Picture (cartoon, rainbow, N blue to C red):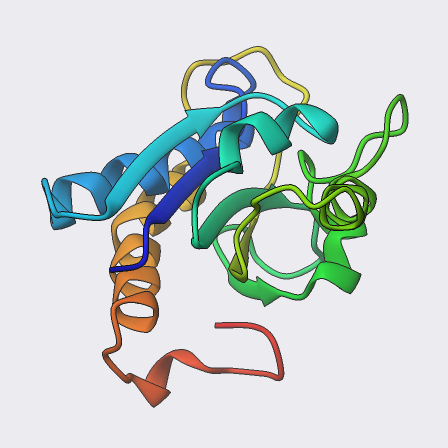
Length: 165
């Protein structure tokens, strides 16, 4: 059985930046306690993420993303598109894509399968423990769509553009 990690990234006191954490909390409520599935919520980036994901076969990440679309839009990102994600890139350290490459080259046990979801946000710089209303309303639906996709259920209605749900 593959060991899977659902990882929500964000900061719970920076308004919409908490969306990754909130979506993974919702997914954990939906899936409950299942063999081989773990859940984590973190406020780290770059190399520090390697400690979190080490030892898993499969990784599903949810993070806030800056976009021009309406807040609460869901995107599926590739490693090459990570510059849009807030916590998966960092101007002060090595970004996540580079950290992954370095870990692979060093022979680290990191997930072979990876899905990365970005949720469009309005504000990630305001100190507020509440997300904007539109992002808050989107959390349950996003959690359901991620679970459907990652747990093998097909729902073509979710796909709006090439990488956007």
